[in-house]
Image 1 (spheres, rainbow, N blue to C red):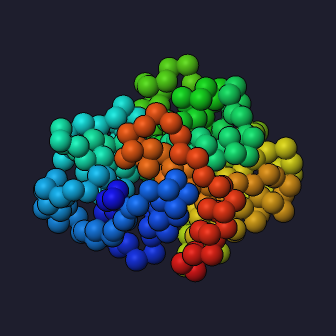
Image 2 (image 1 turned 60 degrees about the horizontal axis):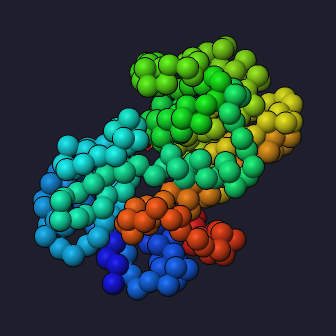
Length: 284
Ligand SMILES: NC(=O)c1ccc[n+]([C@@H]2O[C@H](COP(=O)([O-])OP(=O)(O)OC[C@H]3O[C@@H](n4cnc5c(N)ncnc54)[C@H](OP(=O)(O)O)[C@@H]3O)[C@@H](O)[C@H]2O)c1
């Protein structure tokens, strides 16, 4: 039996147990996926306990994605760069941390036939999800990355880190309310919201108002609760192609399972079945 779980707080609305239990069926393994609710000050104790059990691995979510790093024995290069871990494998050598949000994002773009090499991308946000998305966009050779954030200083810090790691990628940043922000959105081929703005229950909120003609552009939201965020609705009215946050969630989960199984082979699953199943389990 493959023993997995998720650590975080709160966990009651997590879709990961549904996702992984369905993956168990899809790949024909017996598995269990448990919720390990854990507040910030309980992390060290829980990790010590998990090391002593037969659990193979676990997902990591709010509030531990960043603070777990010093507790790990090994951190994969992408997770080190991003500064956040969402997947941990337990072996006799200890705890190994990975970040699969970046791969989930990449696979979601692939699924929608969205190739961004050589293009300009706008990333809204500068938190953990933004770091994973920027890392992936820079790794996949976007020509230019424009980071827009409510707090411009955080956009600046992220843009510096991307410039250092990917010197060939042009990186700019601005505050969300800056006049450069609307120019950037007008000129970029791809715009992604990586903020939590618009997430249930504040479903009317948008990180920035989208107006005008966005035909030929792709607009993505990493928020998946609700699926059709107000931001994506506006994008669609303006004529953009849209990608919701559910595909990134599905593919980060598949990549996590691949790491727990410690295999180089991607997990194969019925994408439409998984997507429809999760849509039916949205916590809304
Ligand atoms: N689809 C997926 O697989 C997937 C994977 C990972 C995360 N996510 C989602 O991504 C979202 C962000 O997660 P995170 O871990 O990056 O959070 P985080 O590290 O706390 O960062 C939050 C970001 O959102 C911005 N923000 C929050 N409220 C805002 C508002 N009202 N207006 C404008 N900006 C606002 C913050 O700006 P400031 O810097 O100004 O505070 C910051 O840039 C969450 O909804 C999470 O569920 C989805």
